[in-house]
Length: 298
Image (cartoon, rainbow, N blue to C red; front, side, top):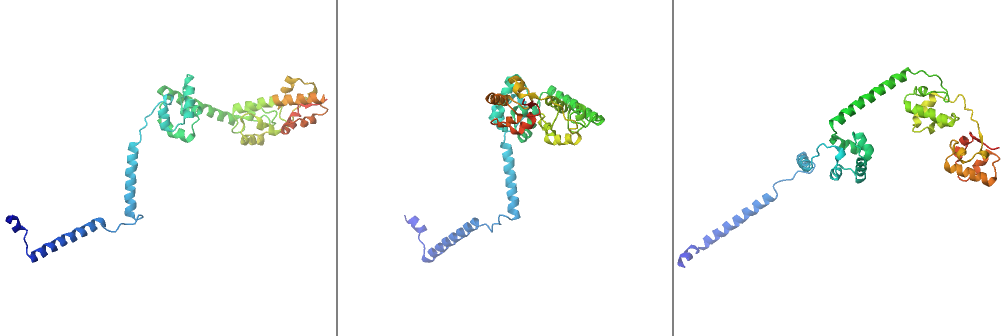
């Protein structure tokens, strides 16, 4: 006991020195803590140093995100799975159209056919089509077809330059005459001629707009070259003597309108004037001038 007592027994001056030393150590610790807590003035968020540092952080994050993103390998779209479709952003309805098409034993052989079958948007097609991989024989066949189409286009251009108009009469122009107008293909020219035959000739230039799959701007271009010079001589028929099938063959008269005309004729016994057609309920007044070209009331 005396041994330990000798080590802990100090004089007053010694005790004061120890107390001072303890206070000094405590002061140094507090100063060190404050320095660590506030290392210096923090630069503002829009300073060049902070902006450069933030760019480095964003770059690292982007690289990390790219590494985490599943890698997409080239694939044949004919054998795409539901999971792969969802990964690419293809909707359930769009992929179901492809599955239905495939169940019929058919295959899509180009990205254009893929879009025609699935109805995906242009933007999505451009994004996912870079991963499409078709068999080599399909790729080679598509190249050959493209060369053939290019040759046909060049041939049509050369042919069009060599065309000489035989007439500017809309009712006398031939299939080749119509192809003189830039943008009019052979198939469109044939449709114009067929529709003109159905009408027995154009009586109004606006009837050209009724041709199947004709563009309004293209119609204007055609009418700059062709006009109605000789109107058709249409033999009108008596509406009071026509049966259902005969009346249905009249241009602009569809099934429903045919029934309405015949029902009205039964109500009034017979039409005294073709203008009476306008009295029929829901009669398409915008078609009256055209229907009146073929009918009379006697």
